[in-house]
Length: 274
Length: 297
Image (cartoon, rainbow over all chains, first blue to last red):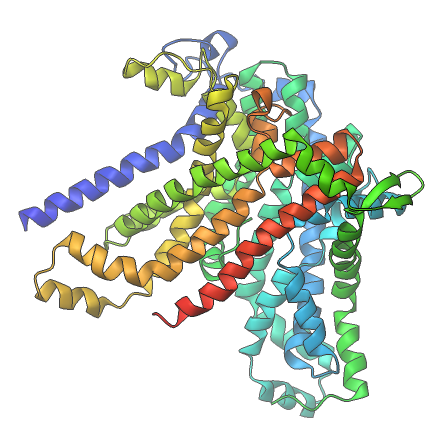
C-alpha cells in the first residue's frame, strides 16, 4: 500500500502544479491591479503589493467610462438572455409537443445551418443591421442574438422527456396549451433552462467581434470592446489595464463559483464551446 | 403519441415558432445565402447596397493575395500547435482527476476557470505576462538561464505565444469532456485487468485509450473547428494588430481586415466562404466517421 500512497502523492503533486499554472494569470492580474507604478515594474516581481492601491480601479474608471460599459454589458446580457429563453421555450414546445405540416423540414433546415460558423454571417448581418438603421444601437447588440438553434435543440430534447399524457390530462382539466407550457413544462425543464441561460450569459458577456463592429460611439461599447479600446487609451499603465481586466473577468468568475454545477454539467452534456 | 397534424395544429405550431423563426431567418438563414452570393460580388457599392458586377474574380484574387496564404498557413500552424498539446494535457489531467481522489471537484473548478472568462481580458493579462522586460514568463525562464524573449514583438515567437495562451484558455473545456467520457467506461474492465495483474500503464493503453477514442475524436474535431475561428485572442494579445509582420494573421483576422478596415465586402465574403468550406469538411468528417465510432463502445 506504500506504492499506492506514493502514486496518490504524485497525482496530487502534478494536479497542484497544473492548478497553480492555471491560477497564476489571475493572481498576477489581481496583484498587478493593486500595485503602485514602481512596484509594477519591479524585478524580481512583487507578488503582494506593499500597499494595496485600490484607487487604481477608480483611476481606470475615470480614464475610460467603465461604469457605462458595465451597464451596457449588463443590459445586453440580460435582455439577450431573456429573449433567447423566451423564443427557445416557445420553439422547443412546438418542435416537441405539436405535430404540424412542415415540421421535419423546418427542423432539418435549422439543424443544417448550425454547421455554418458565425464568422461567415458577420458581413451580411452587418449589412442587414445597417440597412435597418441599427448601427450603433442596443438593437444591433441584442436582437440578432435572441434566438439560438442550439438552445432550441437542447430544450426540445428535454421537453421530449415530459410524457405527452400529461398534456392530455391538462387539456381535460381545461388547461390551454400556453398555460400548460408555462405552468407545467417550464417548471419541469428548469435545470435545462438554467444551463441554457448561464451559457448564454457567459457568451453574451464575453462577446467581442460583433459588438466591436456594430458600435462606434463610446456610449454603446460593452466591456470587452471598451477594454480593448482602453489598451490604447491607457497607454502602458499595466496597473490600470489589470484593474480594468479584473472588472471584466470578476463577474463571470463569481457567477461560475455560484452556479458551477449547472455550467459544468451543461458543458459536459452538450460539448459546446462558448 | 402526438396527434396527427392538421391545418389548425400547423397554424398553432408556426405561431409558437414565429419569434424564433423570424430572428433565425433574418440573422441566420438569409445571411448564409447572402454571404454565399456576396463572395461573387466583384463590384459592390455598400452605401447604396448595389451590386455592379458578379464573378469568380474574388476567388482568384484572394488565392493570389500573399496575406491570405499567410493567414491560411498561420491558422494551420495554430491548429497544429494547439490541438495535439491541448488534447494530450487535458486527457492526462482528466485521467488523474478520475482516480477517485479527494479534491477532484476543487481541481476541476480551477482548471475550468479560464473557460468562463472574456478572451479579450485574459489576452490583455497574457500580454502583460509576455512583456519582454517585466513579464512573468521571461522572469521564470530566467531561472533556467534563458535570455528574455520578445514574445509579442518577435515574429518567431508571436505564434508560440498565441498557442500557449490558447491552450491555457481551452484546457478546462477539454478536461470536462474527457471526464464525461472516462465516466462512461465501466469499472468492470479495470477490475478484470487488475485481477489479471495488468500495470497502470497497461490498463491505460489497453482499456482507457481505446474506450476513450470516440471522445478523443470528438474533442479533436471540436478543437480543430474552433482553432480555425481564432480571432479575439489575436486582436487583444497584439493590441489590434495581427502580430508583428503578420506573424499571427489568421483567416478570421483576414476577413476582419478586408471587411472592416478596407471595406472590401466581396473579398471578405470570399475569404469567409473558404473558411466555411474548411469547417464544413471537418464537420462532415465528424458526422461520417463519428457515426462509425459510436458503435465501438
